[in-house]
Image 1: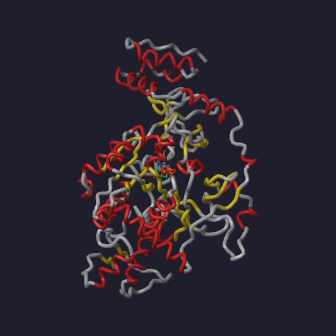
Image 2: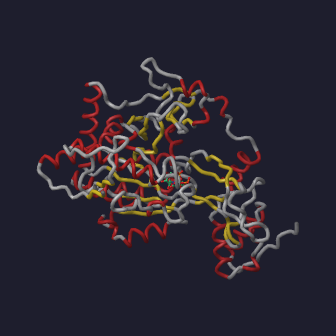
Length: 478
Ligand code: UTP
């Protein structure tokens, strides 16, 4: 292969960025330099200037050239959990947590934090996932559904709940534009803050950068763990402190059932003085492919499905429940000062590698076919911060009330299952409120039903509204 000619530019800072690429053995990214416009050249060099080579060299040495992750030494044990309340004592504790959570919300001590920087690859949707229409009757988007839950919660607690939204460079403009277009769904603009997370280059099997286009290096968002760094870098953390926020409710864009700012969860976490907490659900079956919250060498973390032996997956407690249970649903509480601490000396979360298809062109400029696993992506996971928390609460919740993610275009965890779970949840609430809906084949409503979060955020609210003779404004689609 012919040696790549080094481009020469007038600006010393940009020249230094080019020189560094060559020094690091990545000069091939300038392969198409002669074909690029002035703007495209500048954009490419600016992109080069964002790369953290200390990090990249370490990742390539560990994950591409070396043998990373000696998981064999790991001792895995179940984590202690707050169960779904069954006994009177458990119910009393839940009520206590609820009171504490409501108090903090009424004091304005909680912010909502949405991570929406992902690429929605599995869904195959090329716009931000939050703009996906999801509700069964009104076709509200995921963003609107979340926004209305936040509005309803602020009304309920009589306090503004600021909403921080992490995007990525790839979807930032589309995300903010969507909120503009929809007038922030009724939220005060000053309470919604957007900021992008960092991007990290993908590499090929030799640790070389790939080109997404002739003038752009293939990069991906640095994983939801990058949110802890982005909170700090963007000034969001400082803004929270100014507003007197103590606790952050973290959630992901694709969970249609997420109870944003759930007072019970906030309360358990806050009363415990925990730094980071997690909600979990029971596994659907022993071999369900979910990460479970557990102790890894004595520290809290998420145990990947593949790290449990078949025996461990099936092992049961004396009461018949699974020993290794507690599927992570990516709903967390984070203390503001914990996020601050996690950023001391730069974010220390480990990077994980995934060998997958990376959007790239080959040496001749032709796109690499989508079915070719041509690259390695690096990502951090927010749950890796659990092991750093001095105290933590793992709270078990009912899947049907808290978790239904939109991940895939079809089948499991798809828009279809999410819509069904919404209808099932709202049907349960309506029945509890005294409305006897006809049952379909599987005991669920055969109708499309929708309850706006602005009408009722939960079953209790719907029941209360029904008692006062509230005339329901939901729609039934027959
Ligand atoms: P997933 O890991 O499910 O990724 O993200 P995704 O982008 O939604 O879908 P795939 O994997 O490309 O199919 C879970 C949550 O974390 C956010 C996503 O936006 C989603 O809310 N996320 C993920 C980020 O904010 N940044 C990332 O780098 C990765």
